[in-house]
Image (cartoon, rainbow, N blue to C red; front, side, top):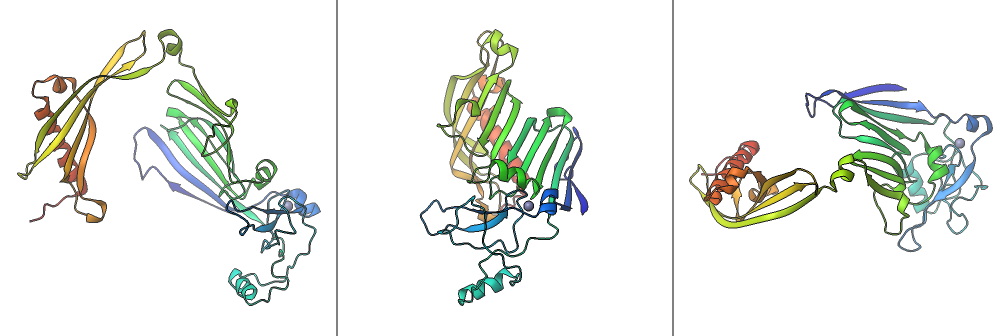
Length: 343
Ligand SMILES: [Zn+2]
């Protein structure tokens, strides 16, 4: 068992983060006391290909602790169903190298080689945590139970917003919970409660990366919890005004670039509350403005969007004024990418 840690704060320095560090506890013994005392309980595990009959791997796993024999076995899918107790023989004395086994099978010497091997005598797993003290990007709590193919049987986090957050995931530990609650299929399942944008969001045993229209209503939902939502109405955002123009961007290197400009005024707020207005500029330069040199990434900027001060937007000559802002943003991009003008 050994512990090491990595300082994450170095990658993204932030004054509001006092500590951001990952801890890894590797090679920890897996807690399977019952299996140690009474032996493992072998069942058949595997999956059927979504694309027909050809790929239907079957192997052996302990139903209680999730440990697999080494090798895990390569059973006949016509004889063994997923979830069925494995009552067949084991062959603990076979070559352990997968390459050697594969060659033997390819040459027809597969006597016993497709059978599961010996149970590992000292199975281990790992734990990884990430601790943030100070500003974090999570406000809520989550637990995910991985599917059979997932990298991590269990993962989760607790986020306290500006105070910090703690993330945790396991390697192989927790396979028992995974076997018990999410043994078959390809979907990791998640339970979470999050607070953001004045709402509480919940997911109850929902697929981790997907929502389906057939899911029951309670599986995935949200509710406004900000008092203003009920007193002043739902927050809205609407476009109230739009101006279009063409313009020319003059760069200090003497080049000029024709651009199309669209300036949109948006109003945010609640029906019975205070409103704020912003101006957003969308610009397009079909011929592109060179801002970097590494050609494999595409060297030209073909447009962008940023907000514009209200005074600038209100000016008679707003198109010229925003072209100056575009030139400044292109010069900042050139500086960022270390752009060198070709001779
Ligand atoms: Zn076991």
